[in-house]
Image 1 (tube, one colour):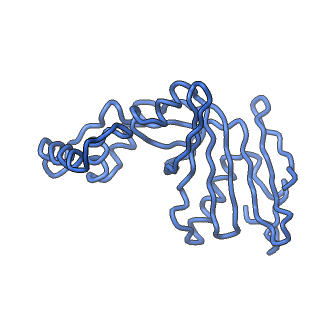
Image 2: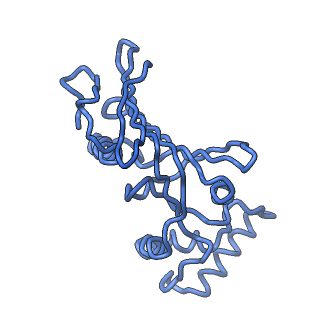
Length: 207
């Protein structure tokens, strides 16, 4: 929902009872305002011994959590397999300088869900994902380009390219979600949802 009035302020009563529905509303408002790449989110993971890493990924859905896709042999996938918890941040300068943070357990999406998303990708995106073994060391760019040419040669026109078994996705099922909105006076609004049983507790945090 939009913030009350034109103050840029948000209260618990302004927000949906479900944090994923509220995230969807803010995301739609960012798209409508022309925010560049509004689905970009920082995804933070950690190794089994707690060494953190973060990178930008693209939010591809809000089905029972925050969904993104990747090579399952990538560094982030290895970390999520060894330590299946993650945190994500989305930030939009428009329409109202907002940020959403989510954290909780992460799990692989189903094979059927991965197949459906793979089929919806453009042929060029399929080709690059199939040709590149994400996060693996390359001797040179020429090696990567050769892998892409070889993949294209085996699948002319980019049609009929099957989803590699190593390519799939993850779903972050948040146990906490925080909505932050900037306030011109520096007294920013922070509303946190905490999972409680089958529902959510909402609380205001000091900025």
